[in-house]
Amino acid sequence: MSPPAAGCCHVTGFKVENWKQNLRAIYQCFVWSGSAETRKRKAKSCICHMCGAHLNRLHSCLYCVFFGCFTKKHIHEHAKTKRHNLAIDLLYGGIYCFMCQDYIYDKDMEQIAKEEQRKAWKLQAFTPTVVSHYQCTMTGIGEKYSTWEPTKRELELLRHNPKRRKITTNCTIGLRGLINLGNTCFMNCIVQALTHTPLLRDFFLSDRHKCEMQSPSSCLVCEMSTLFQEFYSGHRSPHIPYRLLHLVWTHARHLAGYEQQDAHEFLIAALDVLHRHCKDSSIKNKCKAYLSLRVRSFRSSRALHFLEKCDDNGKKANNPNHCNCIIDQIFTGGLQSDVTCQVCHGVSTTIDPFWDISLDLPGSSTPFWPLSPGSDGSVVNGESHVSGTTTLTDCLRRFTRPEHLGSSAKIKCSGCHSYQESTKQLTMKKLPIVACFHLKRFEHSAKLRRKITTYVSFPLELDMTPFMASRYSLFAVVNHQGTLESGHYTSFIRQHKDQWFKCDDAIITKASIKDVLDSEGYLLFYHKQFLEYE
Image (cartoon, rainbow, N blue to C red; front, side, top):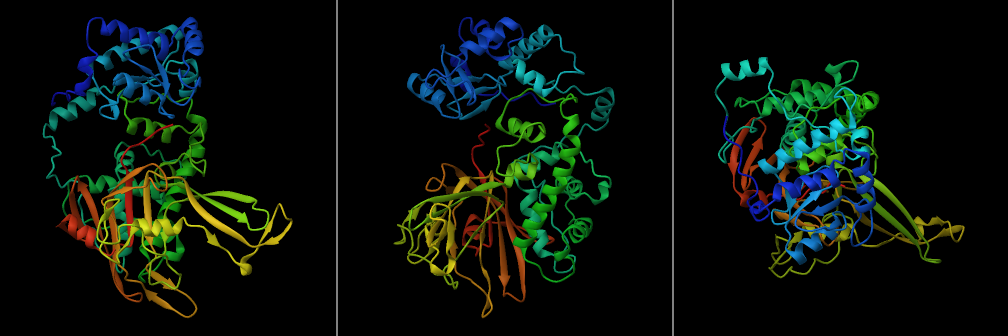
């Protein structure tokens, strides 16, 4: 076994005289709070020193007596002003480094956290069979985690299989071609994008799906779990996704048959079926959620907290669908529609969930608008602006601009109590972890059926600040070659940082970043660079 990583280098400034005693005191008084006295003290004293709130992911500075909201970034302001770079999450006990901008691991600190948490459990007199997520978080001792210890059987398997795979920058594990089963390139390119979605990969490879369907053989989530295992098994021969195709035909009958289908339509259908099957299992597991003891590593990170949130069926997730399944947690955003009456200026607001954003292109029958600043050949938002070139940001700005609905689309105003002309504006209320942008290249109307080949410049790093404060990284691109009647889908996927591969059914070849950015683009998959749990 290789030695553990050294961890964050910024903790050395904290490890001065009596640092262990100070850290233990913080865990005892403000994090785990095992006794009734310490819980009362925590309830009274643990409020944000800036806004006075109890919630908003309260953190405590490790260098001085200061409590601040993480959500409202009050603890961030304190860290920047005082140069106190370490803080502790008062709910989960994770250590956050403002220099690394992430939750960090330190062997000594983790040991102290474990010891103090065990003491808190003993004070509460909980046994492992009755401790639940709800009891632990409500009593202030955190969720009960146990470090994984191998069983005798697992130790025996490790001894008999000493060979270990090392993940290096040149590692090809996860790269695997898919056999075309007859015009199934539309499915293969979406499968490549999904199997290279980081958090979806982590979810399935950590065996978190617990199927409760009467017939697991008909569960698409179970098949996706098997698919991830096949992709990351290290096998190099192309995989034959016949079971996946059969399940798609079973659950999305409009996609059945060997005709060429739309990759975007397949993506939405696949997410819908995965969402429904995850939801079915979640409902059946809801009563078990508080009674089962879940064995996990204590190490705190954004990914761990995110996956814990997906597992907790006792709470409504923070997304517009109020669903806690892995699909909604990763792919669902919230789109706000504001319709303003032109007479009384009353505003009617609705928020709808979305899995992707469909963007109009120049060249379509829908009028476009002027290009954004930078169309003179400069670089804006990481996109190269060749003169006259449309960018992804242009398309997003057009998507969110106010639209006059006109006299032919009057709505009944609740203020005027009559039908009036109005304007409609879309805004992104909540951005998902994975943002999928669909460039509307296929135009269908009563008079016209054609493919729009307009080139759209899209960046590796997408700054969504003009729309919402988030930064995204490109990790997959689906392309379509050919015409509306006859064509072929391929995809580019990112394996490691700055390492790209082209997936053309069973054939996988190395690709350059230029190959990716110069491609036409049909579906663009971006992943949030920083995960914020609430």
